[in-house]
Length: 326
Ligand code: SF4
View 1 (cartoon, rainbow, N blue to C red):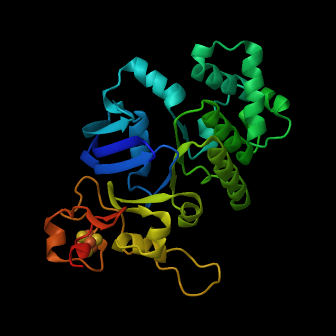
View 2 (cartoon, rainbow, N blue to C red):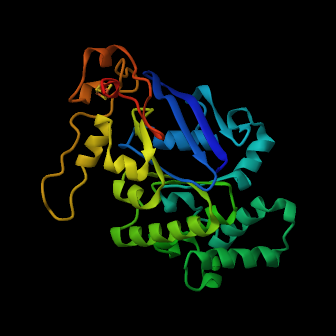
């Protein structure tokens, strides 16, 4: 049986802003086993990136404040780590690929400087020589199928295309040989043909290196192809989780169903329907089920009480009172 790598329990995150307190994460639960590939889906603004940044402890504090919960990596609670443990966590515990490769790379340093720095940082104990570090950098660039890696090490980010920059960010994330990779919309800023290439590449690499991965994305197609299990997130809460095949075969939560109906079909049949309304205001989120103002099946209880997780199968859970009725 696979060992549990990451376990987030009842995580609460607030942001203190001029107008008051934004209650952004409201009791987030998530777990991931070693070697598992998990997808995290939901609309923009539902808390996916805040969850990822909380795992890495890189939320700007203030304005952010983690007000409750725990994030266990193995047996260690990330929220209780001191500076030295955090440094170790960032050097070879968890890596992250961010949405925008241009903003992720420093424009005034060459790719070689940035990549060798990452490798040195994550292999401090091995005391690699300059030559060995460069060899690893060349090999990391070859792994992501970049032509002429020796020349690319001399380049500045501006001399490379968006697709090449994102491949470099992937190379950096995987070069540190972390236990967990978080890929936050890794292809959002790329054009469609490059998106497919980069995702295919990332999929091959995490498979080869058997890296546990959380893939954050808007794209249900990508999640279906790429992951073993999916979390659906809405307004700072996980509303449904299930093995990927099962979720696509029988989604339960009205929000999950809405997301699926919103995907345009390649055949051109039917009309892609959006979900009416929008993500709630985090200053004054709705009481009870946070989805109730948009839900076509809303009941009285939904306005008053937060739905607990109902078990809908061995590994399928849904936070919706409709399931209680079944
Ligand atoms: Fe809709 Fe109620 Fe289920 Fe929330 S709990 S999704 S409002 S039916």
